[in-house]
Image (cartoon, rainbow, N blue to C red):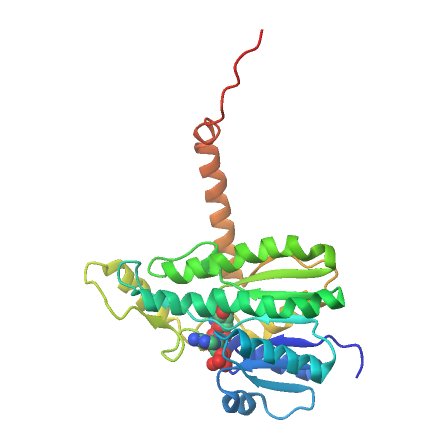
Length: 282
Ligand SMILES: NC(=O)c1ccc[n+]([C@@H]2O[C@H](COP(=O)([O-])OP(=O)(O)OC[C@H]3O[C@@H](n4cnc5c(N)ncnc54)[C@H](OP(=O)(O)O)[C@@H]3O)[C@@H](O)[C@H]2O)c1
C-alpha cells in the first residue's frame, strides 16, 4: 500500500458520506465506512479492495470501538475520521417530545463524541490525524422551526473548536464543517424527522418546514464537490477549525457575523459594566 491516508467515515450509505466514500475510492484512498445497514452500504458503494464496509450502531460505544479495531487491523493506521452521520429534526421546543430531542442529540452530538473518544487512542499513538465533524450552517445561524437541530449542530462546532485546542500539541487537527443546502437525501421523508405533536399556533414554523421540504432535490450544493473539499482539507498543512461550505452557508455566516458585530457595538457599555470597582487606595 502506498502512503495514502486511511479514512474512516460514518453514515455512508447515502448523501455526503456516500459521495465522499466513492470519491476517496476513485482516488485510491483506503476507506472504512459505517452504516446502520451493511447491505445498503455495500450495494451503494460496490466492491473495491480498498473498502471496508462496517455495520455500526453509533449509539453503542462497543460497536464503535470494534469498528476502529477492524479498521486498524485492516489498514494499519487511521488518518482521517469523519463524523458525518446525522439527521435534521423540525419542530419547536414546545412541540418536540423528550425522546425526539434525545434521539436527535444521540446521533448528531453524542455519537460524534463517542467516535472521537474511540478514535483518539489511535491518533494519539500516531501523533497525527485529522477529525472532520460535519455540523451545519444551522449550528451557527438557525432557521425558525429547527431549534433542536440547530442546537445539536452548534454543539458540534463548539466541541470541535475546543477539541482542536486540546489535541493540537499531538499533531492532531480538527475541522468542523458547516454545509449549506446540499442535494442529498437530507430533506427526504426517510431522513428528516418532524415533531409528532404539532401545535396549530405555530403557523410560521409550518411555513418554514414547507419551504425546506420544497427544496428537496433542488439544493444548490453538489455532494461530489463537497467530497473534494473534504479531501482538500485533509491534505492541507494548515486546515481551518471551522469551514462554511456552500455559497448559501457563506452568505448566512457573513450576515450573522455582521449582526453579531452590530450587537456587540450597541450593547458594549452594558456588556462592560459589570466589573467590580476596586476601592481607590490613597
Ligand atoms: N444535505 C444538507 O443540506 C446538509 C446541510 C447541513 C448539514 N448536513 C449534515 O450532513 C451530514 C450528512 O447528511 P446528508 O445530507 O448526507 O443526509 P442523508 O443523505 O440523509 O445521509 C445521512 C447519513 O447519516 C446517517 N444517519 C441518519 N440518521 C441516522 C441515525 N438515526 N443513526 C445513525 N446514522 C444516521 C445515515 O447513515 P446510514 O443510513 O448509512 O446508517 C446516512 O447515510 C449530516 O450530519 C447532516 O446533518 C447536511
